[in-house]
Length: 132
Image 1 (cartoon, helix red, strand yellow):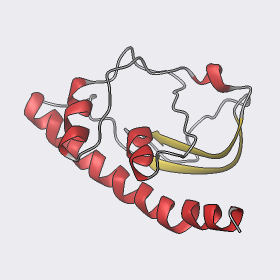
Image 2 (cartoon, one colour):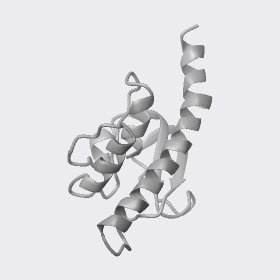
Image 3 (cartoon, one colour):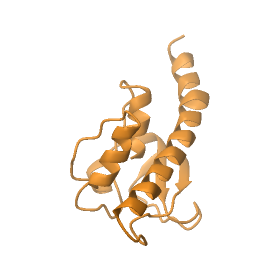
């Protein structure tokens, strides 16, 4: 979700998305709630972080339950700066598809807000400095 949202701000950003323990597929509910916000996300298989260990990232954005301090980042992942979004996994406890969709929409909005700030206040400024 975070990758698709950040990519929606600027198609020219070089973005990679992977997980420490990725699921087998992107949820149709996530695809649906992103679509409702005008963000297209195609069904795909989430990547494992090991696919990208040869890269060094300017920013590592983590999205997971818990706090930044509790998150165990494998040493093989190289990055200059890190930003953590503590988001509760909506798939752990939900009654029905409608409740799950509601929770996913709330998470979408929260991630959108955080990444919009990140893009506008940090990334755009870095791009402007780089282009001088």
